[in-house]
Length: 332
Image (tube, rainbow, N blue to C red; front, side, top):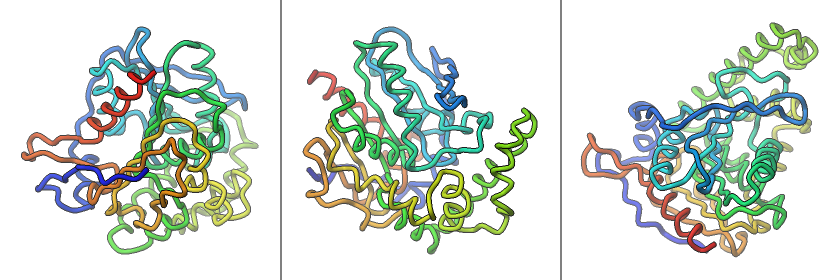
């Protein structure tokens, strides 16, 4: 199903770029109550860091951040606070190397890597077999979520899933970021990814994982990389067993997994998202009957800010997410 949502951007953030940039510049981090960190050892002898919020037996929501994000990202931190108020516990999966410490293998995280969310889901399901679980993903995390849902089909039991601002067709999104004002986002993200790789090499050398460090050193000089096509071809594809960036995009784009989703899923996309074009938005015949697609005219990339006053921004996503989760938990 596809719907036009009632979201209306704030008059003082009346274009896609303002909607996208404002939260990263002006949204303050909230000091969360009942929060703590847990580290899990992964099956390949690496680790993932989890940031929890809330205690008790309430329903549990797993949160997946976007590229170069973490549990400290404003949209993650704010949502944890909001969901705590609504009676939900949350746990953030910091993708490998995103928790403030580099991970212990050359492998990183990428848009098609569903191993860690699958591992986390089964770990939590075994730990709390009667707890109702949902998953929410933003941007890259949304792509990981949708791909995982499609891969698993009826093999998983979630009461809900929500994906926001998803790069559903990775090749189209990589190309879009090579144009116009979007090149500024690309430049910032690529710079952060290069820093991520440099920190990783230093860390691997420090802990004596020289074979792992050498895998990255063999990639060669990354300083001249300027586009995602280049980065994904030289780094992501080579480290994770893809033939090329094109092969990585083809295998990892979540649009091709939507038909086999069996979990009640809400997908929120904005037509003016500067990280992609309208062409990535799927047709109704590409969706499982369990998927609700809500398309907004505005909202930018993980923006969706409304409100009458610049001094009191309203983060509409938090309201819509809470409504959907509450509706689905009541249907159990």
